[in-house]
Image 1 (cartoon, helix red, strand yellow):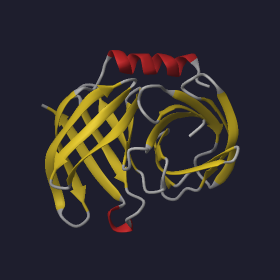
Image 2 (tube, rainbow, N blue to C red):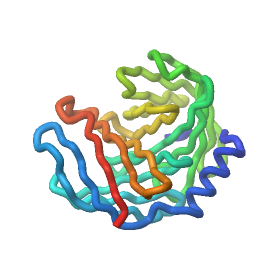
Image 3 (tube, rainbow, N blue to C red):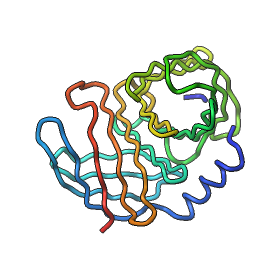
Length: 211
């Protein structure tokens, strides 16, 4: 996707890079059909992002993650699935995004987070160039299927909105997204997956505990 970030958010990003989540975790996920399943999760640095790699009964797969404060967004799916994470302050969402992990872009838009909307979006690409466009934000029970319209390019994705944080995976409407919260005291990550292409297993809670 060809897609401004206040100093506070830049400081949060810098803090995340200085205090990485890298390590091996015991992970458990509550699934719709099979109950609680356990496995392992490895988190490694990948450029300015994080690589999440799962080995569990529900599959061996990886995702690209970004951390903003104590929130982490992960995109899972095709290799071209990008990830973005935003913090909400009032009506303004400000965040960071990446496709490859090698470089990070920024993005901001105004939205109440409560009802479907079409909003103006503005941002910068990892190379420093800027862009403006429209962002479509349908929303239902804290989940969204956003669509960015930048010039002649249209990019779809999936998103989770919880407690003032929006996590999105973009590039294809079937890209899965996860939003985790870090407990600084315990190092435990707890979050939720949203799988938009399968309504039966669309919401899957997961907890990861560092070994």
